[in-house]
Length: 218
Image (cartoon, rainbow, N blue to C red):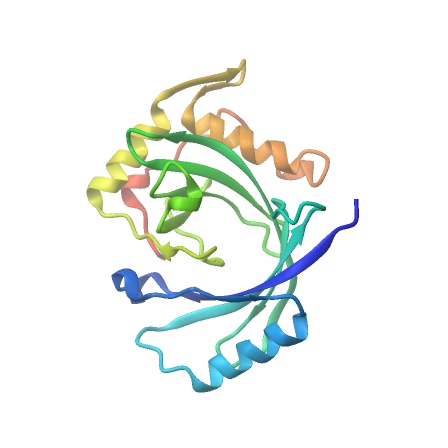
């Protein structure tokens, strides 16, 4: 299979700067990396931002022969002044579980960049493509992880939403002998992606679930 790429330009906003639907993360898709870089620099130079900007990323989205996006993507991450901060920051993802009733979906993301953070992404719709916002949440502690937006507003959960998340993660789900609840299903999805890539990062299925009622931006 011959793999080609398109380039998506994204602005990522600090959570404390989000103001409903006013945030526009997706700045467009280009077929040439040169054009994406030029657009990013022009946007940074001429932008009139109403809230703090964390970074910009140019995402290398691989396409298969049918021109469908693949799960793996590479990103170059830039600071607001347009300087390259991280080159070819790789990520792969795997679906964990969803709930039509709660309008939630969880995907595990594997950060292949230098910091190698372990986190899952919570979407506010059971189908991620229809979600309007998402939250990147660490597997290891009750904190958010900043990252590219994937066309969604950054979701900072309120107290009720944190409680719903905790209950959802504890709810029963059978997948194999290691998976008995949604929390372990998310771990399974993460481990599925690091297998054969970086197995030292495998998470134990008895990993204690952090108290996500204490989710913090710090």
